[in-house]
Image (cartoon, rainbow, N blue to C red; front, side):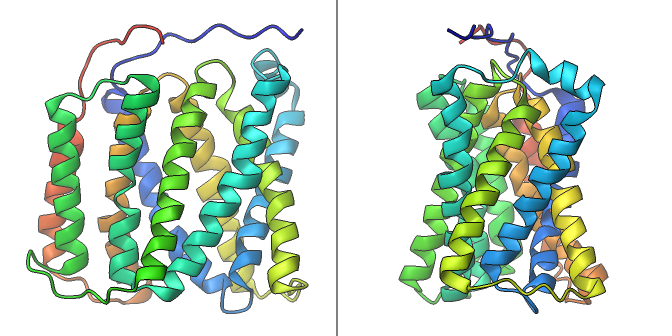
Amino acid sequence: MAKIPAVREQYGSAGAGAIATLIFLNIIWAGANPAALIMMQNHRPEWVAGFRFIGTSILLGLLLLIPPFRRAVASRFPKHLPHLMVPITLGAVGITTAYICYFWGTQLSTATEATLLVSSSPIFIALIARLALREAFPPQKVAGIVLGLLGVWVIVNKGLLLKQFTGATWGSLLVLTGVLTESIMAVVAKRMAMRYSGVALLWIEATSAAVALTVVSFMIAGSPNLNWTQSDLGAWLYLTVLCTVFAFSVWFYILERAPVGGMGITIFAQTPAAGFIGYFLLREELHPTIWIGAGFIIFGILLTMVKGKESRN
């Protein structure tokens, strides 16, 4: 019977340095959608997701072959079969479901509605973490979530009053399913990361997702387009190396000890970051409300920085 590692000491706050790092990661993730759009000009969306996780699995696998990394991960690699099946399931079922729902949902909905729904994930992460992990849910966190949502609303809607809504029910439901799936995955991954290496868990998830997405892509989209342009390669490198291998490795490393509910609040930073990326790279209009919304989001994130240590779960 494989020995199950002890639970790590858990902290009540990610800390100022970790929060700044998480905001930086979300700025990187804000560029994922433009990069995916570039690839989708020549590739089916299912294969864009598949290529991303195939690359992630290979690159992380090569990284784990390096002796210092392998030694660091070996003692915290899940060997207990029921625990090993958790990241495998998260990758094969969770990631595949979330990405398919996002791709199909955004095509049936509007960019405004999809962005607002995706930005609601911190609410679900905080609530599920409270129920499943008994993470603290102080008034500051509630206020931070409310301010973050208000900031996202002001940016996406370009004001407080409702301006755009189509009522695209099926598209919105698909996006919401993706949001709920990822929120549940984040909390389950947190429980696993309390015992095991976050990087090892990420590699297992990515490998399972690569296999599942390849099968689904062949079934839905047929054979992949192997004629890549330089733009395709650049977008793929951004999605794979920066957004997944680097950003998610750091996210999982912090996840090992920090509360996932507090970490999830930083997802709000993606919305203003996406606006600035669109302005500087795609020459999109930068509406003045982005500054107001960004202010609400930053203040909301700061409110969630509660110091102190939590007891072990």
